[in-house]
Image (cartoon, rainbow, N blue to C red; front, side, top):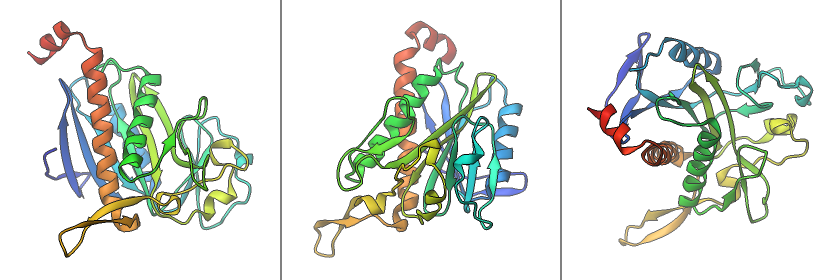
Length: 264
């Protein structure tokens, strides 16, 4: 990845990284904390305006508290409305979920046709990137058939959801993406049926006992518990894992002759 910055609508983006795949670059942009509605509007505008030459992007964002309800979502899954947390109806698949401080959100704005990528493959790759990220912080997790997202596979919170996933495909291009809970107030999840599942526990990395290795003054290393302080590192690690799995997928999918022709 290479660093830099740019402006969007007069607003300076905190950072820009460019990760090269076998043919098509993915720009990873740290947008910082951003209210949900302007970010949602920006995703749709980006997708509507893109051309065959527009680079794919991954946006890393943290939102203030908000509930988002998918395009076919049932409002009844909001069990106990909170006047301090807005509800935004959006156009991704799935039911209701919560975004808030202490959560990494990665939005994937990809040209699926150009990457020769099917939606089911993209979901699998996103889930694998989350699994790889959690493994780096010593958490075991798994997929569940028919229930997109990632769930803990052992420990006292086995079966709890730690990452939620939802996408929109328009004209062969994706937006929306995946959220990973790092260290956050989990109580807003108790006011909903998360992703439409009654009684589903939602957990974050800190509560689940995630750890990282920190250097000591004596020159050694010791496991430390994950806190919100590690969130920027976790966001970048997730972005790197997403780029890695998408790059690997493209390398496997595109025939060598096609790759050579497009790279020429």
